[in-house]
Image 1 (cartoon, rainbow, N blue to C red):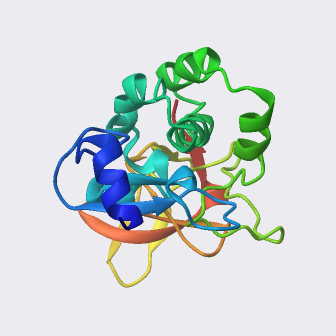
Image 2: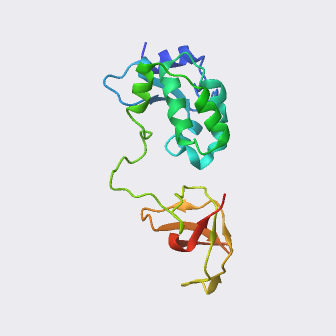
Length: 194
């Protein structure tokens, strides 16, 4: 029996994180020395798309309320890592505080603090607003100074809210929609909204 068949049998052909039954695939929980059913979980396409950046759609992860109690260590580790990434959300912090991992599992969970699809680069600087608050994809910000938008023939007015921002490869810039137009904004002219 191959690993995928083992995972389907173990999970009753359901995503081990959200219980979805469609588009199932295996997901290796790092670090991986040898691939076996012990360090692989079965997840759906939705979880696979969200797992590299949990904060992008944090509402999806309310399913961890149930799956974090799984008896499968790899599922517990994945839940721990996602909840830790979402710890700025009160519901996720509450779940994270309840989730107990024994010493061996905690060591495994902490051995890959970043989720596997994220870039683990010590030189990558966080994106910060004008006050030094760290910005993440999906955050809402407000513009603190009137800005002339080149090529768009309008001024982004002070106090304009920019919702659901996207990060760029440059930590001094974000992308957002202002007056219906998607533009790049310098973070030094932005303030994070709570």
